[in-house]
Image 1 (tube, rainbow, N blue to C red):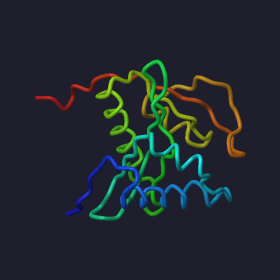
Image 2 (spheres, rainbow, N blue to C red; image 1 turned 90 degrees about the horizontal axis):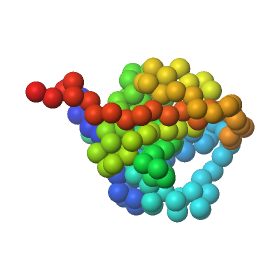
Image 3 (cartoon, helix red, strand yellow; image 1 turned 120 degrees about the vertical axis):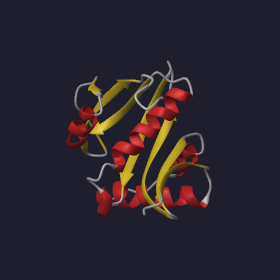
Image 4 (cartoon, one colour; image 1 turned 135 degrees about the vertical axis):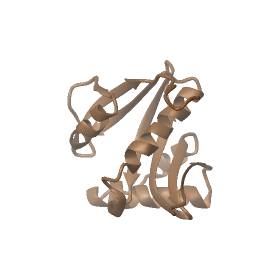
Length: 153
């Protein structure tokens, strides 16, 4: 049986380091980018979630607090061998739950154009014109967070 769990990661910690390495391999290396000192410093103020199987990280996301009860989901990364298995969806839902439990009403992200259908399938809507970020077409997408009562008895 798989022992998979989602954890909030302390920054810094060995688990955060695993998430950072995953983000680097999946999101940065293909674009020829490195993390800057400023980005790593900013990470200390963010919330990091990781989906682990035993001690191995399979997926991670970073949540950044914003104004007007909005939280930004960013740096969503899933191990290549695990992509397409619903882990990004599961981790995004955990991020939304965290945001809702902490008083946020809107989750938003800058979605790569190729990821728009994924976010739309989770209820996100495009709220911007197309723009270029890290040389890739993106859209800002957002979702109003609501309490999910379907799992309550």
